[in-house]
Length: 84
Image (cartoon, rainbow, N blue to C red; front, side):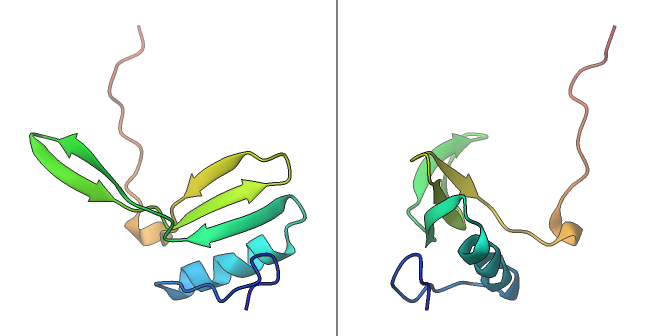
C-alpha cells in the first residue's frame, strides 16, 4: 500500500518493488504511477510500443519517466561520433 498514492502499487519485478520504497521515503516525490501508459514509435521501419516502468511527479509538479533495469541489462555507452 502506497501512502503517497493512497492505493496499491503493482510492480513487475523485485527491483521495481524496491524502487517504490525509495519513492515513498523521498520527500521530493509527490506521487508516482507504475506502468503509467504506453506509446508507439517507429524504429528501423517498425512500429514499436513502449511503456515506462514509472511516472514520478515531484513537489514542483514536474514529472519524469523512469525505467528500472538491473545493471547486467544495461549496455555500455556507444560512441556515435569521434571527437576532432
